Length: 347
Image 1: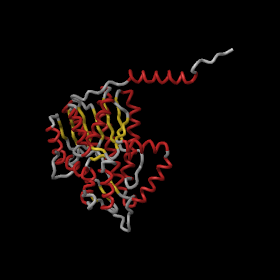
Image 2: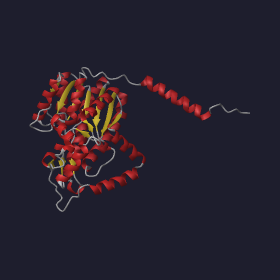
Image 3: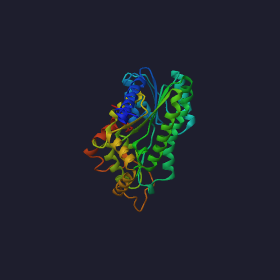
Image 4: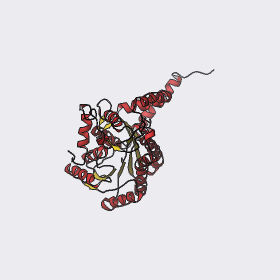
């Protein structure tokens, strides 16, 4: 005669859950102390990259700024230096692997090593598919994906050697859910998302940690330097509103704080903004419904028109009464604060 143990499956589940919680507590990696750490941030002359440099500097890290525009880079260097941080600025075009290797060599010669690499450099083109060209897709892939690839492969040898290091890849919620009129951008972000998650799995045994960051909309001020195509003014208006309204976006400083905390915790992935988190979870549960909703969104966006508008215009050259109104005040403030205009130093 057999007897059934009290609790049965529920007891086993409770015991397993308890064991998991205990193991997670004791296996949790030690919080990373950023003091004195050498942090290289690509695309760090403005926007999120500059906000990240500020936040890492507040944790007493040694900052390496890099971007292709030397004037922007110098303004950013002066700003970070005013915070009391040790900062080095080196111009680099991340789309060229020889320049990226030279960048890493220079930083290593100066500091001896690189502790944290943040792949943040990006480009964004807003417009319907009919207005986007092969060049738009190539530029997005070269900057967002290949730029991150070049930098990662350049720093890995020294990280392999010391069995230590952190790589932080800034992807996007657009790398999880592809949004209409941002197709070249989303395609590159999807590629980086896959690369980053695969890196995390393969490099863990080497003692190298990889964090994948998927931000939602942030008030970086970068809308003024985004490229618009098709009906430029209409495209810029909807994008500027989405990227700057307080109920659709988060301040870039708050986003930077969350990213740095996730770096310190050695998290494997973080999604920035509750809106992005909800979209990611909704899409995972109801992919077909998400696709249908995005079809409706596309129908609300500007059409390509008879002339497809293949030429690129920057957002700041496509302003309208709405995009210059109080509705985008927070975004305009961010643009001035985070070095998006050539005639304005950071403040």
